Every structure is written in C-alpha cells, then in structure tokens.
Length: 436
Image (tube, rainbow, N blue to C red):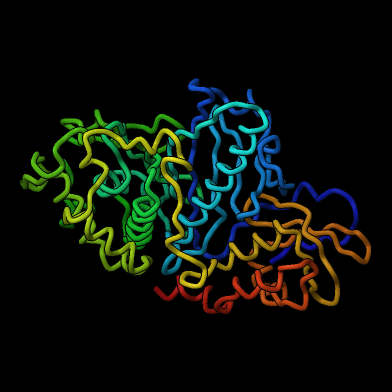
C-alpha cells in the first residue's frame, strides 16, 4: 500500500522501507573511465553525473540520479555505474533488463560525446563488471534453518559459475560471484561487451536462481542427489567485496578461464571427466524448463547454440575483445527487442512516467511526481494543497492505465508514448509469477 502523507513538511523518518510485491530482476554495469589514455576517477573529473547529463534528472537516493530511460547513474568508488529499474520476473524479463541497461549505457555514452566536444578531451568507458540481481522473497517462516538467503548463495556458487563463464566471461576474467543481499541474490561477473550474450547470461541466471529457490533445502548436500556436475577440488572463497562467495580462478584445480573449453577434461565429484562446455551444457539442460519459462525465443536459441558450440563463447577467443575498452563505440546496442515486439514491463512504465514528471489524476486530485525513494517509492506533490505524498510502485500499478491515457497527458508527444507503452493488465502480471 502507498504511504499517504496528509500533512505538509518533511517525510516522517520512522516510515518503514517498502518492498515491491512482484518478484523482480535488475542489472547493473560498472565502467572505468579512461581520459586521454589515462584511467581517472569520475568523481574527480566530473564531480557528479549532473555535470555529464544535460537533461534534468530526478534524484533517486544518495548520489544517484534517474536517467530519462528509466535507469539510474551514479559514481561508485572510482567507476561510473549504470543500473536498470526493477523489472517484474516473467517471460522476457531478462531481455527487458538487458535492453534497459544498454539503453542507459548508450544514453550516458552520447552525453559523454557532447562533454568531450565541449572540453576537447577523449573519454572512454572501459567495461569493468556486471551484476545480476534476482528477488528473494521467501518469507522467514518458510526458511527455517536450511533455506536462508546465505545458504542459497553458497549453493548457487557451486551451480552457476560454469554456465555463466561460457556466456559472460573472457580469457582475462578472474571469477564469478554470488552474494546474498537480504531480499535478493546478486551474481557478479565481468562486463560482457555483447548485448545478446549479456541477456543470455541474465536469462540463465534467473531461470536457475528462481528454480533453486523452490528446492526444499539449500544445504550443499542436495547436489549429491542431482546430475549437476561439480569440478572435483573446487572450493569457493569468501567474496572480495561484501558478504558472499566467489568462484575465482584459483578456487579450481586449474584456471578455467584460460583452458581449452572443449578439449581439456575436468574430473567431477561423481567420477566423470568433462570439458567446460560439456559441464555448462549439462547444467543448462538440467534447468532448461525453467530457463525457457523466462526466456524470449531469440535468446533461448543463442543459449543452446553456445552450449553446443554452434555459436562462439568469448572463451573461444584468444583474448578478450577490444569492445571492453570502449563501450558504446566499439560495442553498442542494436535494438533487438523493439517495444512492438517486447513491451515495457509495468514497473518500467511506472518509473518512466514518474521520471518524466507526468501528472497523475487519482481520486479526483492531481499529483505531480517530484522524486524517488530508492526503486520502490515515488514522491508526489498534490496540486490542491501542495502536500507531499509517497506511493509505492505496486500502488501506482493500479493507476497505470489512467496515467497512460492520452487525454491525461499535458505535453506534446506523450499520447504516442502512452500508446507505445500500453500493455497487459495489472492482475495478470501479479499472478504470472505465482502461478509458475
């Protein structure tokens, strides 16, 4: 439900943090900044993303700001980070998240192009890392002592690394991480300078994570009852940043990122000897029904092709591609998923409306969005008395159709925008994940 403030003045500091009701996916990408051939800290050069982005941006929290695309941008300890909005988990959700991420990257790159011209400098975005976030909404009474988010992260650290390597890693990669983040699982890997492979990675991750969440126990011994291959001698180490686990190159008997992914054979805990691609293929096959549940047809074919060797993995190359060094120029986004083929998710549509400042007519009153509280709440001003109100994304979903009606819009071009972003009803989206 919305937090509805009736009095003027600052928000009550005792208000509780809201969680979104629908299971969601989100993606982030971090970039090192290379200026005239030298790596620099973006906070030292630009100070704030507002010094790069020419359009007015809505503040999210801390030092992060929403982009017009619906995502967010901020500086984080020496890198530029771009993040997607939350996107409800359903068929095509990974493609939606990948599209949103690459649209945000392209937008930031275009703004840097303008900054370059104004300051007579060359600025490159070098791909650093990518994070894939999946909701963990198992209530405490169902967790017990064997189904905590920490146990889930450790279990996934044994399942995810090999298939993620085939889709997302390169010869210079050092590891695949899994971190428990309270209400979500975060998988960390290198940035992948290939949008289809990044979307394929997200699709495999969401399919595996959502299915393993359903298992009756997250204890590591449950793997003995499956056909999932685990490399003999593999031991994940504590993650180097925050809590969690890391499948680093030196956690394996040999470096898997530099091996022949088809020729070298690895001993597994069940006595088999398999190549890295064979192991990735077997793990993907085990979870195939669940990966297919959330995938679009194009990405599903790509995943199968990489696992069978019909499409190249970046580990097939002698070195990592040059696209890592100049993201947005040497590698860019070709719109594989136009909105007529894959409509925006409902959470995206709410956020884009809010970020655009579109007025909302609700219960006989007009409200203007003025800011965000994290990803889950929107701050409004009510026209009648200038009072402040905070509504959750889930509350606003029930008013999305009214918000998108052409006759409610006040600026040129918004009617077309509303028609393009119209989609399925709220109730069907809410029930889709629960019915899986």
